[in-house]
Length: 196
Image (tube, rainbow, N blue to C red; front, side, top):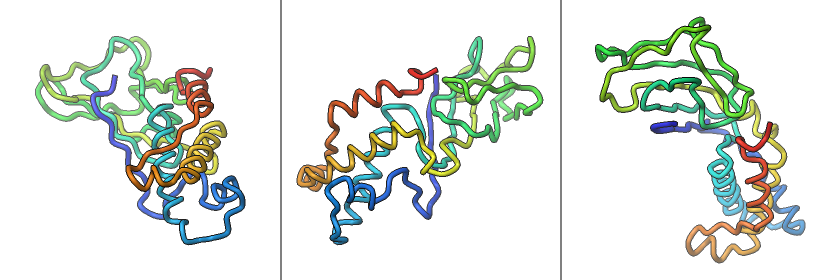
């Protein structure tokens, strides 16, 4: 289980899985552009909500995940999809940071959840006792382009952003998202530990 997780997204352009135009069309072909920035905020909030609930990433991102140690078996990454593992580092028993070379580990990134383990019968390296988060995995997650995000999650973002726009007074007062029950069910059904 992850000790901590940090997700870094590209600074610009902001790559969202749903566009402002899509929300405006879904909300009844709105042509007024005065609330485009607000709709963009709603999309970002909806996307964040879906990503958190489904443990997924919907746009190209770099994830740095720290673990309290190596597991007895496979190391499970907490977000999907994973495109590649950039590095796996750990604090050894002497307190020095070490890197586990890619030829010393195997990975099954399209598995659910994505997995990493040592090659063959080799054990995981020992880590410094008492070190906080001694194992760090850095990986590229999310689709290469946000438009390629899983369709059920894109639909969930679109429905949440549209419903929130239609009830925007609550969003303006306290950033409250409008999440219809059907969307909660869609997210639960599509969550990464729920699909083969």
